Image 1 (spheres, rainbow, N blue to C red):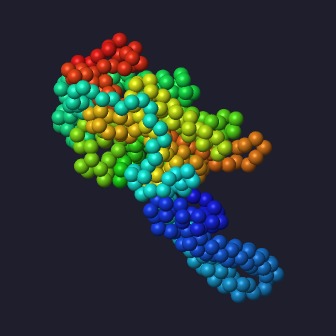
Image 2: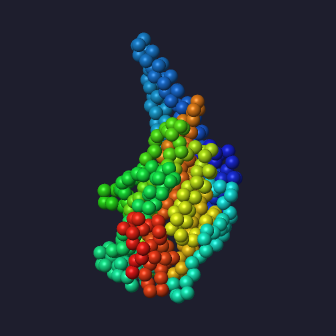
Image 3: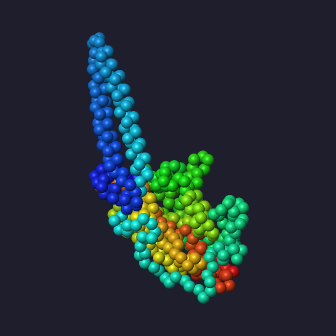
Length: 421
């Protein structure tokens, strides 16, 4: 959500930010509505003051037995005028709120221009992309050949974009989630949290998933939403709160099931488990002061990077351009893992600083020492997506005979197993 006062102070700069995302200007319309709203509210306050004065005058006349009918008629007229003004204020506030809720976050100045991923900027590359002396297979070819990845049964049960893992691959997925949680809690200072996967409208709206992404989410018959990521309940847990500045930064992590309808992705990544309706992800959420959020963004991204480094998966960090930056983000780093089977870099983590965008939507604030409450900054990042990490580990650890070498850091979680095959 945006502060209408900031927009009013510099509408040209606001529209310039929207233009970087390929959007049409809206500031002048919003400023015009805001000016009219304030004028109407002033008129309403004047009517309210006159009506109170009339009530006193009418009371005085009745106490003395004098005729008050003219003043009573004026009072009825004023009440009717007030109802018109009240409806106009409500209409203006509703129109403004609807537009503001549909507008994305303002971009950080460091975000490069560009309309799509072609303009993203690679920040650095870690490791050497894996090459083999044989033709590398994709994850689904490896998993199906081993008899441990079953898309046919999943389709029979649930339709497209689901998978059944079994045996050592199911255990590896579990091991990855446990390994990531241990790293983030023991090494990175995040507090492990178990969260509901069903949330209400307020939680989805506060984390900028509504109304923008309603068509990409699953909703139950009783009106709750299946979470697209644990970012939603983790971040929304502070909705309406005023936090003590001494308790910040607050860092939380959760391993949860996630659900996305993948609307608009027809024909993309149909084979395999890159794009699923249901998947597991370890999420990181940080709540900070405005002064700390930039450093926290770098710290969070490094926490995700270190997971890939310990797994021995080559990756690159990418700064997303204006047109590719998500709706709620002011700035985003994507981590892209090298997948030898595809001979391509694919996103495995996205770490975003939303600044006070979400906090304004959910009214989440902190109280500086000796100061008035101010909005917190919220950040979220994948640490990592379990299914995509499983893909990366499989494709980078494959052997010519179709077996898969288990990364050393995962072996303690897998009973010492060194190879799947």
